[in-house]
Image (cartoon, rainbow over all chains, first blue to last red; front, side, top):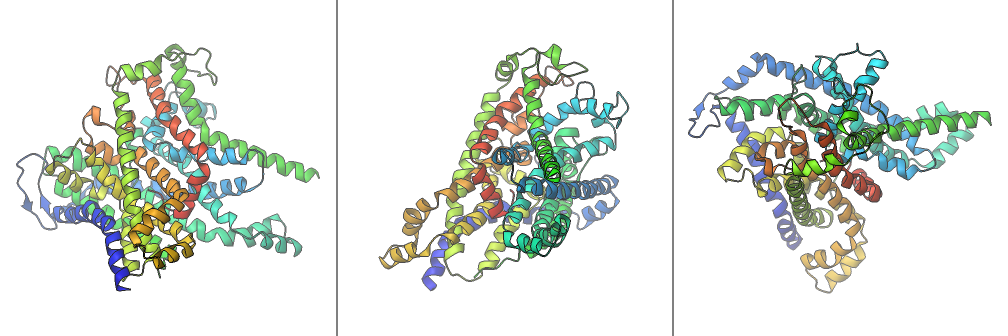
Length: 292
Length: 278
């Protein structure tokens, strides 16, 4: 028993060390830096400012705006991804020709780097030559000549659309895994009892995949709250699309080279960390981890 | 009978919609990359290219150091995959098979990292890398990538090790084999399917990562592929060479698309085993 503990220690040490040095130490340093005021210029002098950076947060309209945007993006995109993802999972759970091919195709949006697929979509949303712009014009969603990615409001919807495109198939694959472990006998029993297709769905399928959907949903929420790539590539956070991560990087990496903004940027990082920790805690709880 | 036909029709229409939903942007990028500029920049784009040219595929390598970017990505992703698996195998095995105190706490700490908002360590990690002179270097990117992928690796591998028949391990332990020998000469070889599944996910994650690469690689020659594509510039700031950009996008996503078709079962296995994304 004692010997096992020692072996375990040696086996875990590389992982624990890497994680401590590359994740926990910088995190601690972010907390520490958030109480100071300094810049990234060489020779910048650190000044202890206490909670000033945090007080500034509540008065920074750009931070509040980014927070609102992030919440809006998260709620809307996760909603569509969950609903469409469930529908998609139900479809590909059926038997049909070339099922393997279709399921492989569903991995493509997930496998392509977001930064690159966002560029593909940016071309499709091009104000003059974009096919999506053309389609939206024909469908009467926009007036001819409207630059979708240059219009406040519209630009955010385009970003949400791209995220839904990328993540819905991924959600579907996770939910499909939940569908596949439902025993067939349950459906047969329900059918013998005279349940029709709708009843079978709402009384058998849905209750049994709800836990899977729940886990996927919280997980997606965590991801959506830290959204960066798609926003940065599509609009750089312009036209009212700035999210927390985009604003945070702007303060840390652009502003902090010219003024004493690094401490304030760290305070934003801490705020994002706390926001996400709440959901991460829910996620870990929902997994019901047990280790013997 | 008629009801069945209608149901089949609805099913196949849905399947076709799903298929096109997933592959259309990729198809569109491909056709855009082989259209000559006079067809590309037209108000009414055609779905099937009328004229075909491969000039964009030549220009993307001659106008910019794109092959260097591809190499950067390959080096970083391969190194990350190797080291994450190496470290992850040991930690995963310890969690799956050994008894030690505070196991739940250790696992929770490792899992917690997978939920870290990357941006919350972005600034301080930049300072650390600058202090160590590791900005614009491979180790400066590989190191954080290993950490980003370790939780996923440990999580999937430990669930995989749990499924292995324990009898083989017990027999070799009785024969006086040490745990480390056992791990490397018996457990790892029989777990190669699990290692492949995990390795694929790590490779794809590292190949795709954007935020750290954008921040820690600041010289164009050190850019990884996603950064190079995201910061694509033409002769002037306002003129983006879209044909070239789409060619670049196709070149670097084609291997991923092939990977997905070849290894779809492995990838899905890994995704659902972890139910975690990097």
